[in-house]
Image (cartoon, rainbow, N blue to C red; front, side, top):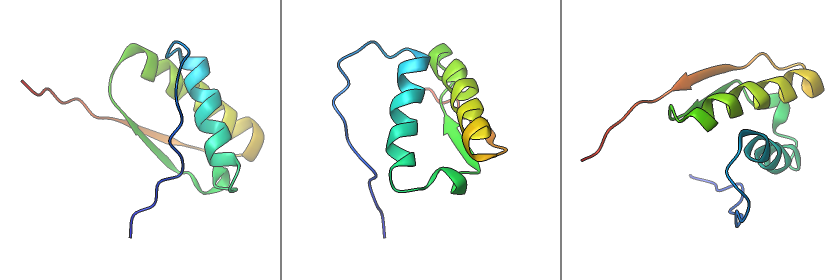
Length: 76
């Protein structure tokens, strides 16, 4: 069974801080923050910094120690 946490319109720039704040709000609402142990992103520069900020938010607020996996793919 698959679940979608949320789909939100994103009108601001996709900066690392904006992304981290929005994802944190989405996963914190149903109380999932303490259950997150891994995060997978692509290797875009904003996603690298997002990963650092989001990991820090989870660590500071919930004590998580998070692993991050970067997926590099190229479709032509």
